[in-house]
Amino acid sequence: MLEISTIRFEKERVLEGLNKRFLPETQIGLIETILLLDDERKKSQTEGDIILSEINKLSKEIGDLFKSGKQSEANDLKDQVALLKEKSKVIEENNKRIQQELGDMVIQLPNVPHVSVPVGKHAEDNEVYRDWSGDLDILPSDALPHWEIAEKYGVFSLTDGVKLTGAGFPVFKGKGARLQRALISYFLDEASKAGYTEIVPPLVVNHDSARATGQLPDKEAQMYYIERDDLYLIPTAEVPITNLYRDMIVSAEELPIKLTGYTPCFRREAGSYGADVKGLNRVHQFDKIEIVQIQHPDKSYDSLMEMLNHVAHLLDSLGLPYRILRLCGGDMGFASALTFDFEVYSMAQKRWLEVSSVSNFETFQTNRMMLRYKDASGKNKLAHTLNGSALALARIVAAILENFQTTEGVIVPEVLRKYTGFDIIN
Image (cartoon, rainbow, N blue to C red; front, side, top):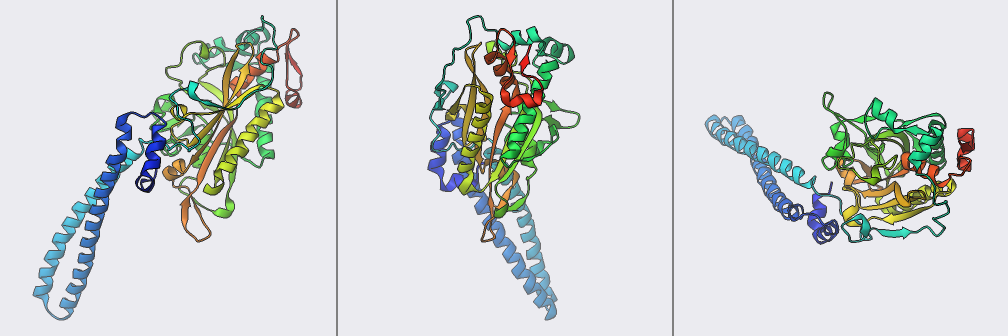
């Protein structure tokens, strides 16, 4: 959530950044409305402070008059104080109304994109930050897509998922299940080596947690909601892991706080259709390892590059061809200030599949969750939060099945073999 002080004192930067997102005029128009309403709030607050000061002054005088035996004059002042208290109550209620309206407006504004974010409306406008320099067409023309490989070798079943739950819920089997487990263990081990503390969080969160990291109200339609308990299935481990520090003040010496966690993730993917949903390309439940950092504002972009290199290392070690995109303003997430997407190349489908997003949210999440750090002078300041997928498994599995297929079977990447216990799926 944007700070009102930022909207007021950095108005031009905010407008310039938000215009990169191609927001509707009604949303951009909230900037002026927020500032006018904040002016009203400050005026009302000042009026209320003056009245409280007058009440305190008269209360002292009343005490002095009673001590002096001037009861009649004291009672007259008491009547004045009673009127002032009624007025103060009205002002207090008005302040609460204004604060509520301000909160309702500010929460509708997305984060201000970083200066390096390219202008653009759609995914086609994203900038290739790092391209793949190798060969992308090394498979024969009759190479199979991963859903046909899965059927051939019994790696996973989509029809069983339909039977148990519905479309978009794959059931991994045999060596497919072992491959899935191997990827989880490998990614967690690599995160631990990089200094991340492993967390096993709940898979459901309350409204406050979903709101704090920016899923609500922006992504409500994409989340599974348990109405009876007023809880949400998590779309990513970022939500519960980051919220561990909600309403907390940490010392500057504790930063960076580096956390990782494996969870299943649940997304309704409302409105998804077409060729991009075949097989594991787009499912409602998938496994993912998340890395999260809480960092000092002066160092958060260094941390973003560190996280970028961590994800790149994982893909390099698996031997998968990939590229990195810097997302344009129109394609970037609601809470992000800067996002890089990793895409692996599916040689059988001849298309790029997103497998990771690494983002810096700056103070957008911490302002919502009141996550602060105490600086050297003892002042409390908002920290920065970052997160990244390291990695999302469904499409990684799809890429491994397709890119490493041979006539004998699918070759397992060498770094995974100590986890799988086998080197080929056949």
